[in-house]
Length: 264
Image (cartoon, rainbow, N blue to C red; front, side, top):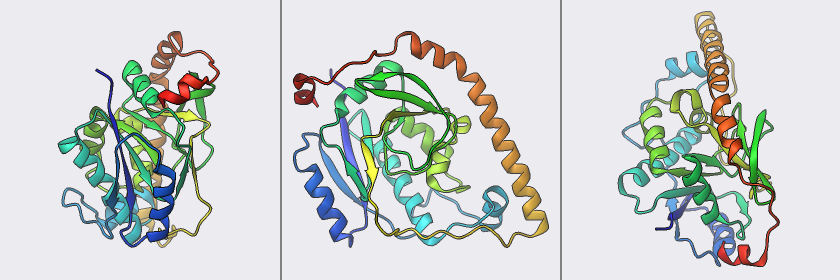
C-alpha cells in the first residue's frame, strides 16, 4: 500500500491575502490539504512556559506571537499524532511559495525507505551540513545545526510522537526546538535546493531582543548554551555511522522525466 500524506497550512483566519495566495498555489494539488486556524496565544494546555526558566535556557523571553506560533505548530503535530489518517504530514506556514510540481509522494517513499521521520523542505539560514545522496537532481542533506525556520517540513507518525514528547516545555523558539536532534532523536534531513521559499513580506511575528539578564541568569544561559553545543557535537559524531549507511544505498543523480512529473 502506498504511503499517504496530507498537508496542513498554518494561517491566521484573518490573513485573507495570504490564504488567497495559498489557494492559488495549491489549486492543482491532488494531495488533500486544509488550513489550520493559527492560534493567537499559547493556547495548547499541554505546553508550559516560564519566563525565568527560558531566560536561563534561551537568553531571552518569547513574544506573544512567537508563543502563538509555538502553540499552533505543536497543536497541528499533536492532532496528526492522535487523529491523523495518513502516514505523513506536510506542515506549511502561509508565507511561502511552493513548487507545486515537486513530487511529495516520492519524498514520503524516500522517508519510508530510509526511516526518515522528519525532513525539512525549507531552511532560513545557511548551516553546516553533510550530503548523503540525490533526490532526482537535488541533494539529500543532513544539517549539523539548525538552519532555522518552520515554514515547511514533513513528519511521520513516529516523528510526531517524538516531537510531542520532547516539546512540552517552551525553552526556545519552536523551529529551534524542533531541530534539537540530540533531544528528539530526529536528525535534521532536508531536500536541497528547497522546493519552498519564503515570501519577501513583512513579519507578523515580532521577537523580543536579547538583553536585560541578571548576572545569575546570564551565567546560567552561557552554561546551558555550552551544554547544548556539547550535546550537538556528540550527536553529530554518533550520526557519522548512520550517514555512512545512508550513502551505501543512496539514490543516484536522475534527470526529471515527463513520467516523473505526472506521478508527482
